[in-house]
Image (cartoon, rainbow, N blue to C red; front, side, top):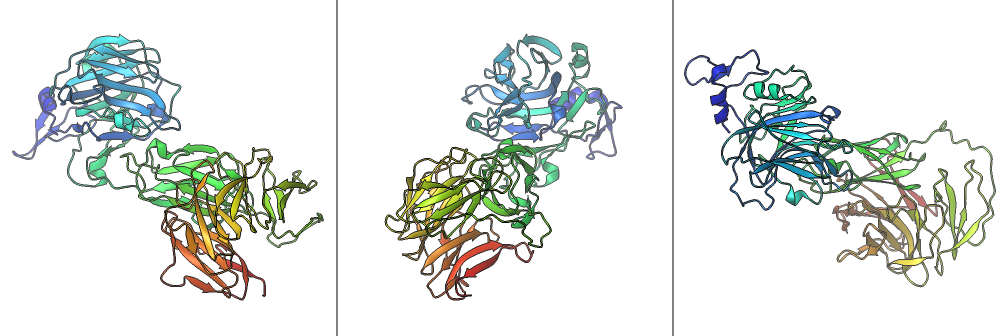
Amino acid sequence: MTKSYAIQRLRHLLHPVGSAGLGLLLVSANLAHAQTLPQYSLPFNGTNQYAGVPNTAALEFTTGTIEMWVKPTWTVGTHSNANLCLISERSGASINGGTRFSLHMGNDMRSIGLWNGGSYQTVAYNFTKGAWAHVAAVMTTSSTQFYVNGVLIGTTNNGINTGRSGYTLKIGVSETEGTAVGNAEYFEGEIDEVRVWNTQRTATQIQANYQAPVSAASAGLVAYYPIDNGITSASNATARLLKDYAASSYNGTLYNYWAEQAPAISSFAPARNAVSANRSGNLAVAFSQNMNSAAASDAAVKVFGSQTGKRAGTFTGGGTNVITFDPAQDLKPGETASMTVTTAAKSMGGLGLAQPQVVQMIGQAGGTGRGVLNGSQKLPLSGYPEQLVTADIDGDGDLDMLVPNSYAVLVRLNDGSGTFGPATSLNVGTSSNTTLAMADIDGDGDLDMLVPDYVTSGTIKVLRNNGQGTFSAPTTGAQVGDRPIYIVAADLDGDGDLDLLVSNYGSGRVSVRFNDGAGNFSTPSSNAEVQVASGALSAAVADIDSDGDLDLLSVGYTDPGKISVRFNNGSGVFTAPATNAEVAMAIRPYSVAMGDVNGDGSPDMVVANTTT
């Protein structure tokens, strides 16, 4: 939009260039940049338009000044919340939500004030609809001075909340994520010549410079947004750019001035299906555009380890296009981990991923790779053990041993040196069991136990871990098919928790059960029982078609030897592909494992057979 006020107030700085129609060029020595007429301001529709600048420490000053020209254009009474936001560092996200500062034109254009998360205080002033006014806020941690058109109009007794940090600097809106988005106080009008200083500007300085551009090299000028590249109908990076003309170039982005595109995932680090992931390294997701601060949170990105449970850690990257997660706990050598990016990952424009994505990786193993094993320890086992599971059940950093043994599970704790203590027999509430699965089904950071009751009830027993290796009494977690024998816990629908796939040997089907996030499982309304080859003995999951979800591979023990392939549509609905739905194997395949065997980035299949 044309800056009508700018043409008038800067007339003495203008100098004609060339013939009529070529425009005018600002040539004052004080200018930070060249401008051509018509000059532009940034319009805001009061609904969803705003500008955002990624978080940086330089914008988190403890004392400073913000200046801008503003022109309100709304009609009194048309906004349910009449305190419309001019500029803020604030977030409503469930993780790291809060306010550092938020400046508002309040009370339907009759005041200006500051909210800092603890108090909202205002100074009375009657702004005029359709008229430009210059406002300046000189902030400390305990007070804010407000100037309008170079004149001090009052001081509040609140200021910058230095206890909050990490927020995007937003112009024209208070917050764009979290539960308060519907009350985000979008500004309706125009804003121009935004200046951010890390110094307390004096009354003399404000009066002397509010009607003129300033030098990019001005002392204390952290960011300067004259907003002179214009608003066009084009959809390109240049038009979307909020250009910072100060020395550090903290450029921002304009949002919702065009038809916004939903963000897409560009890459993962470690890469999808990595078999030698750095066990102590960070995990990162690169997106096609900058993401809001809620994308850098546990609501948007969740990581589970197969031997250690859900990972806690630190997120960074809100306001940028790369979200990084630094886990508090490293992967174990050879441990499979999964990372889910949910639809809670939203762009700065508030659009989420069209569909969540789940990727798997395996922690790098050490040693020489020659397979030379030193020492031995013989551990007696009773009954008919058919499976051995290693997992850190007591959270002490080493892998303990669990062996299903007919009617119980034998537990041996590791002392950290690879020596296992005496076996404890754990009643799991089944009439017969030969397998178990360990998974953090309630997201509390430890591994819970899931045991199929093979003979009588067709149920899955759940024993919850208290984090120290003590399990609750068994409860029925899910009703499944005939003779359940094997469980896979994985995020099937991309919502950030671990769902269940259960191989039912008696029915030749795999049961799908969805987790509500708290470890309670429900039967989906459709496709709850996936038809596979008969004698469903075990299963595995992997993203075999590279579409960002986990597909199913089921062992058919008696059919006469097949691996059934079923593609996931991303919502936990599995269907047979048009070709190669049943992969022939040797007679009586017993188990299947997935991994990138040949290093080409795609998961390969390894099958154990009882007869070969």
